[in-house]
Length: 81
Image (cartoon, rainbow, N blue to C red; front, side):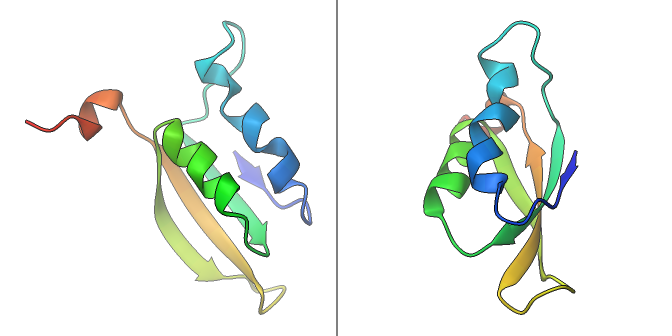
């Protein structure tokens, strides 16, 4: 899933992870999103649902925006052995 919605990513973050909570909601295994500004809640929400960041680069459109890539990992990935 790729998102570039000029700031609405903060309003969408809970919908992006809804697949963990609702039976018929899709589970996105990879999310590419352009982040406008900084909101740690966005990153914490994704992290709490098993997503990790694998990519960060400055956006071509603005010096204050960044393009991020997130992957959803299996819960077993985070278990200490």
